Length: 146
Image (cartoon, rainbow, N blue to C red; front, top):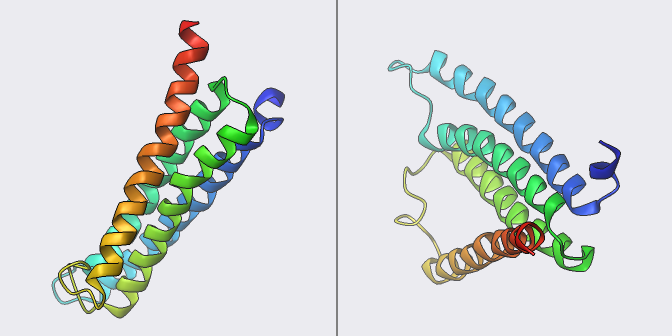
């Protein structure tokens, strides 16, 4: 256990996993409350999405922690590669919560006020999430295969 705690990137990822999981639990309570107040017993679309995404991202963060731990690369590589996807996970959860509070859409891209910014954000998200994990995955394979 000490080996994991002594590495910055896995600690960052595990910390985010905890925050994301707690957010999932809290949004689950919010979702249940909304369901009980609804005539159809259904929560607003993005309340449900916020709940599910927070839970899923918590497990994704733990997976990132494992690959960061086993990556052969130095901290100056692993830390940014770990933070990049986690940052976009957090931004997504926050945005889903905001959309759940507003409860004005069930499609954030269709009803966007700024489609050009959305395209830029989605492109950045893809680069950060895929690129960050790719670096950690390569670091793992280099350690295991060489």
